Image (cartoon, rainbow, N blue to C red; front, side, top):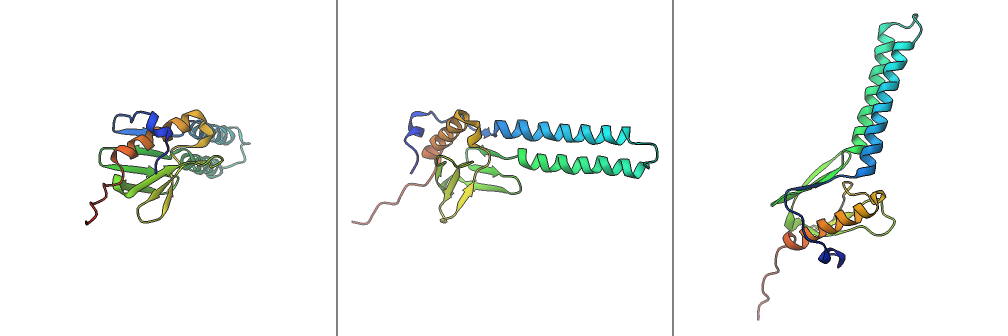
Length: 158
């Protein structure tokens, strides 16, 4: 069910939030570059450009910043009672017993969690391009899952 590597990692204190390091640096760094570039461009344009044209450039920069924010916002938050998975567009709030397993096969960009209803959910808050940090974060989440996850099976009738 849960990786054996997670058995060696102690579960962190709750609440805990995991965020991808590299994607946040790149996303928010590019957002700053886009906004500064558009503002500077709006300032240095020739005088025959009207104010509405300059404001349009700044607005276009704001759209770019919004897109970069969507790429940089994913996170995984675990509390005593629930797990919140925030991906680029959607947010999923799950109870611990709903999560059956968490895994990230080699070559996958982020882990997936298997849910009790048979579906899977991508967890973009941990990203494989973070290397050892991603593996450690996944192992910590798996340790929490081992301690708080799926409910005990009822006793079988004799």
